[in-house]
Image (cartoon, rainbow, N blue to C red):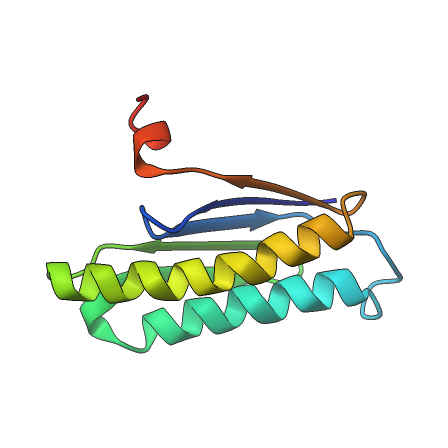
Length: 113
């Protein structure tokens, strides 16, 4: 199962584990999640305004993305990008709940509120 932790407001994403919906290299769920995560990571990493820290290790089935935008305008744009990708992660998790666990957090949840 792939476990995803996502916060559009905090601009953070973690994905861990192979989905297990098919053989390695032929798993459509894993492929879909990987495509979304890698595209999001590279989109933000390629623009220094987002202050992205992005790491993906396909052998270990892990991906982490954290952003520290340089200003409020970059933060707002980054949150919109994250929110759009969150829709994709949510749709996949809803379609394949036996292979994907998605936890979404708001900034208040992350701060204990």
